[in-house]
Image (cartoon, rainbow, N blue to C red; front, side, top):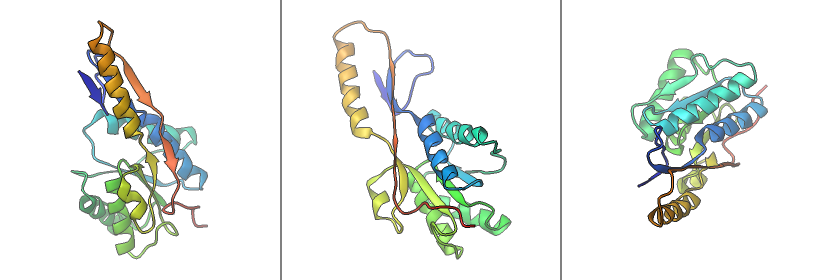
Length: 193
């Protein structure tokens, strides 16, 4: 057994995953470097991979002396419509009290962009939006979505290598994490003065 895009905390099985914590940390640093200080984290809780992304966001804020406070926004599923509803509710209840959104997945980022535009604001002029995954549709959004590239092809190839190695002998379980990188597109920009 080889787990892909997850890990076994007890290390009974080998696993391969993107380094979700460092990916979210890099994404948050990117937004912080653009001057953003109120960065929402839009997420669907429940998976360890997403919890690592949540931790990376918190780590980057803490390093700059910023508190996460009430900036985490949760949705019940990975649907853009649910993300749009959550962001619209936030704006209706509090006004535009954030300048950026980091979504735990591209589908949630797409929903956030829908809600921001529908509320009368512009991406990235009023709010920068960034996703995680680099799904093919990210490049075709309006504006094209800045996102963290998750190296799924490399993870898939390495998982087959790991599985074949495990079939050939009695090797101990291993956990392999892959670095991720930013794909800079037009959905992020400097915070408005």
